[in-house]
Length: 504
Ligand SMILES: Nc1nc2c(ncn2[C@@H]2O[C@H](COP(=O)(O)OP(=O)(O)OP(=O)(O)O)[C@@H](O)[C@H]2O)c(=O)[nH]1
Image 1 (cartoon, rainbow, N blue to C red):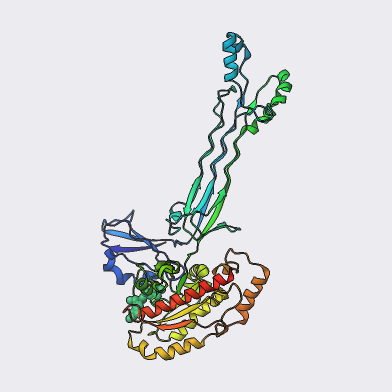
Image 2: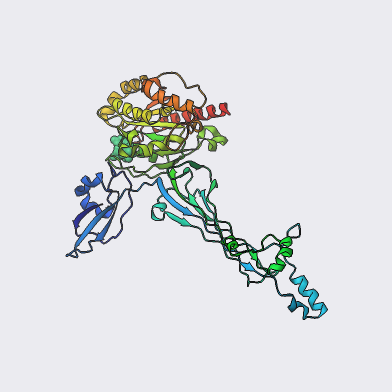
């Protein structure tokens, strides 16, 4: 925890949540109200994630406040504990005394007999009431959820216990089971992977309504009939639940509900993943072609969590245009060492797993754009060589700037040369689904895919993987050649779809 004293704070007690890696970058993005400190805080961008102003408890001066940075919180990974409800208890019951019935008239006796006709099983044996089932805990995919942030505030979920058998010691026809407790249903965003903490994968909740029962409620206890010894034998012919001695009482107790610690990991589900170094213009690109409003600024790591945007259908397809709509994910900038976790690298690299097309965004006005491109490709290769098998296009951005415009054609040629012309033909190399069988965190892989994964990492370089489907120069900020870029993205998406259909 970092404590920084600042003078004359604004009155706000809570600013805005930001997320980053406490080991490395992570920005302290000051809210508008804090512009007056922007410069002073630039150096703090290395550490702070979520900040709030709080009056220092022992502060001698009322004008002094303390800026508290809280520990890093991932928006896309969280550990929670869930506990299902215990089962309700059964009861010790006795049969009503027959004398009471005998004292009534004949008609009354008949009525009472009918009234107290107990519930019976198909074989005629008595059914005794049971304690209610404890509440289950279910996790389900909900389109209305975007992040796992809520789980940092609340990481424990308990279902209620089942109701006890509410009998007044005597078995009657009215005796009924204890109430079952309701299921606790926990919504998570689409694309959430549910795992046991440090254990096996339980579910991959990709579609709306996908769900998994993660903790089962305890079963209710049974009820027992208490009998005098000489009646016991006769009664046992009617029901096995006759109490023989005190040790039977444990059967009355409801079973405990399951308790598990779970790891929830959110993997963005998008058709297109935008990758590139920080500041390349990925967020600007997303904002230029979709309605998304990502944060854009001229310092690196503005994007700390993936932004999603929806690309409209291809108008050239007429009525079929809606089938060509696509989701784009703008991922935080990658840097050298990302595959080892630098700059949030691994956390975001895994979001590419479900994308079908990659768009490399390069700042063509940067010092060495080809090197930048190689760095990103190398990081992808080191994280998962399969990422380089995926179809991709390269966007050379910022051609409104002179230095970019002057070198555009040579740059495009150079980039096209990095990679082989061979179109991937093995089934799965184009398919997003096949990627899921590849080794990664939490994903079990068969021996052969693991073998080729390691071999690929050792033997192949970025030149051995396919070259881009297209290289386009644009200025997403100034709207130069954005339509050409869109055409290429759509054409590439069409290829992915054709390929998928051919596989089906
Ligand atoms: N001149 C020029 N500047 C651009 C262009 N596209 C983006 N920029 C600027 O480049 C800076 C970085 O843009 P972003 O879109 O935030 O870059 P990013 O790749 O998302 O950055 P990270 O969030 O750090 O990964 C901003 O100041 C943009 O205004 C462009 O076409 N031309």
